[in-house]
Amino acid sequence: MAELIGGILILLGAVLHFSAGLGLLRMPDPYTRMQAATKAPTLGNMLVLGGLAFYHPGWTLKLLILIYFVLMTNPVSSHALARTAYRIGIAMTPQSKVRAQPRSEA
Amino acid sequence: MIRRAGITVVVALFGLVFASVAFHHVERQSLPPLSLSYVKLVPQELGAPNVITGILLTYRAFDTLGEVAVLFMVAAGVGLVVGAGGRLGAGSHVEAREQARQASEIVRTGAQILAPLIAIFAAYIIMNGHLSAGGGFQGGAVVASCVMLLVLANPWQRLNPDFLGSAESLAGVLFVLIGVAGAILAGGFLDNRVLPLGAFGAFFSAGAIPVLSVLLGVKVGCELSVIIDGFRV
Image (cartoon, rainbow over all chains, first blue to last red; front, side):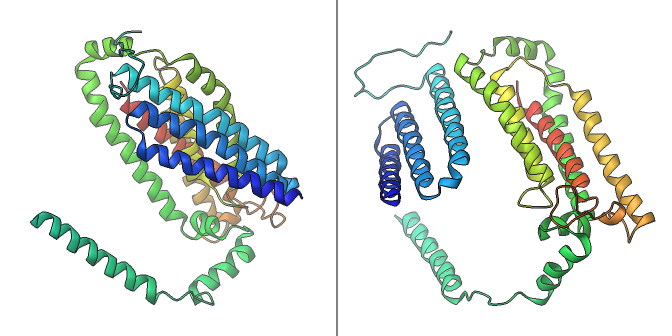
C-alpha cells in the first residue's frame, strides 16, 4: 500500500516536471517561462521526494531537508531572475493582458 | 542552402563517430593492473577508504599542488586585468557601486537562511574527503558559492582582500610544510604518514589527508572568492 502511494506521488511529480519542460519550450516570454520553470518543478520535486519517503521510511528526515532546500532556493532564484529581467526592461509578450511598464528606478 | 547541407554533413559525421564508439564499447569485467594495484594499495598503505582522494593527496599530491598554483595564477590574472580598470577609473567605479541596486528583501532573507546551510555543507564535504566523495577542491568551490550568494544579497559589502590573501598564503605554506615534513619523517614529499593512520574509516584517520583537505579547501575557497570579487562592479 505504501509503495502504491509512493509510486502515485512520484508519477504526479514526474507529470509536473514534464509540464514544466513543456512550458519552458512553449511559453512566449521570459516571465511566463520563469513561472513555468518555478512553480511546477518546485511542487514536482516535493512530490517526488515525498514519494521516495514512502519507499524508504528511513530516509524521511534527509528528504525533508532536501524539500526544505528546494523550497528555499528555487523560488528565490527565480524571483531574483524575474526581478532583474523586469528592471532591465525586457518586454512582455503582446498577448499578456497586464500592461505593467518596466521601471528604470526603484 | 549550402551552409545547411554542410551542417547536415558535419552532424552526420559526428553521429558516425559516436555510433562507432557506442557500438564497439565493451564494458571491462576486471580492472586493469594499474587500477587494481591502486585500489589495493590506497586502503592498505594510506588507510583511506576513498581511493581517489588517496591518489590525489598522496601519490599525486605534487600535481594537486601544481593545480592549486594554476588556480592562484588565474586569481592573480583576474585581479590584474579586471582590477586594473577599477583603479584607473576609481571615481566612476565608486559611482557605479553607489548606483548598484539593493537586493530585494526576498533575496536578502533567502541568503541569510541559506548561507549557514551552504557553509555547513562545504565543511562536511571538505572534512569527509578521505571517507566518501568530496575533498578540498569541491568543498572550496561550495565555499565560493556561499560567498557569491552573500555578494549577490549585499552588493555594497566589500570582501576583505587582505584577509583572503593571507588566509590563502597561510594554507599554501602549511601545505608545503606538511609535504616537507613527509620528506623528512616519512617516505617522501607529501607522504601522508607523518600523522598516525588511525582506525580505517574513522573521522580522524588516513594520516595527513584530512589536514591537507582542509588546507586545500581554505586555499581554493579564498582563490575563487578573490575571482568573484574581481568580477563585480
